[in-house]
Length: 232
Ligand code: PGA
Image (cartoon, rainbow, N blue to C red; front, side):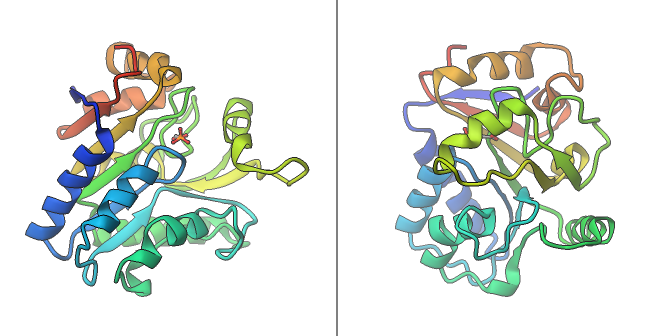
């Protein structure tokens, strides 16, 4: 079962854990997330002025059809919120490419890379519908990286990041549940009252495809860090 930590400051706690790890293992392999949840963690990591010169990263997901330079792409998000403020090497940043025509080949490439370079710490948020990365309800435990059609709930939740009239992608490439579960350690962060139901189901519900985060119950080294607004 995941270890549960309630914290007044999940960002500081998660950043301290990641920083300590990088100090011990300078070539740490980090699995990184986007969305509003990790922004504060990245800010704190930047403030720590860590040496990222040997750190390798894999991001969870990317929208289909957006180039890396598109302001709404997750690659761009990572550049703005973390990478450009560190000395990470471009060649050590791994991303699914949402522009490719051969998705099978692209997702196989990503899975191969993760097998060769296993993720030490995977940072995760959680969707209000219990998704992790873009693994929407219905995603099987043995799923690997693939194209996902986003649920209406996710499209609605993420609409706040898009300006009125701006086209919002409805598909993404995402690591699968199995890809995420392969990480040696998982840190899931949830903030806000609106995550209460998803967290409750993930922790105490049955481990089923209805709530993809519930599969984390089966991980050996998983921590949930919740802010005081998550009502558990
Ligand atoms: P959020 O999204 O961090 O923007 O709340 C989390 C998620 O959908 O995984």
